[in-house]
Length: 161
Image (cartoon, rainbow, N blue to C red; front, side, top):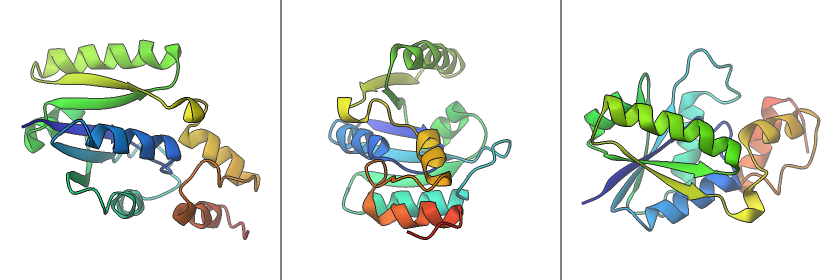
């Protein structure tokens, strides 16, 4: 039985994240969407808010669970029993960084294998930081974020749409 984890900050969750979740849940028996609690980052949404949004997004996926974790991904993998890391790649620059992280994770936890999903072309430009910047200036984020989360993002910037 294959158990994978798709880790990230998901701040906020985007159509790109949704695409990777949908595609990877079709490949693996079990998928954990792991929300990293990075205390050094100033997140737009709290960990609990991000977990809640992802649970809402994935409620119809029988093999997907959402959880949060602190610290090293490989430690969380050992605790959860996952052996596969799912990562999305938008560009060559993503690959260089992700390859280094994948190799480091494998050295630390030899059972860890990283599987890369290339991003759907229609989301290749999209990142959570782009969404935050557009939203901060009142830009239209409806093409970036699932409908049920659009107003929640604007609320974080005290913007009424």
